[in-house]
Image (tube, rainbow, N blue to C red; front, side, top):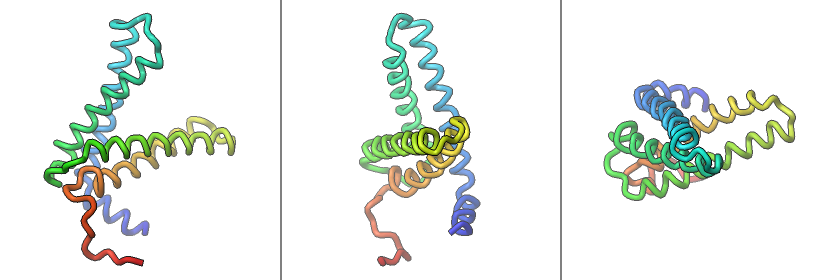
Amino acid sequence: MVRRLIGFVKREQRMLARYLFVGGSSFVVKVGAYALLSRILWTGGSRTAENVIALVVAATYNYFLHRFWTFRHQGPAPGSAARYLGVLLAGNGLDALLFYVGHEILGIYDFLVQTFATGFITLFSFLIHHLFTFHSDPWKKREGVRAK
């Protein structure tokens, strides 16, 4: 399994590099949108609401860059926006669960848990986006896959 994962990463290193660039720049967009809202445009507003708005801006940016740059080679992907939203929600839920279990239950240092969770969710999201979210026909039976 690990050997297959390493082979996959080697084959898809350009796409993975694009994926990581989009993720990093999405973070910059989120922080920038939050700073613009909280420090300039809506200084008396709710920080939570400003954070949610910034997250929506960053997620929209992230979706379009992935759709039209990172995964463009996979062709048209009808329904990808809804699948993206599902993966986004699942990834955020999994991230919250990993943090809760790691920090609150197991007592692991919070930044260590965040680092592990971020790495795991990044790999999880990349694979799901590649195989499902931006795939032109995500429900198509794959060649060479055996049912158990």
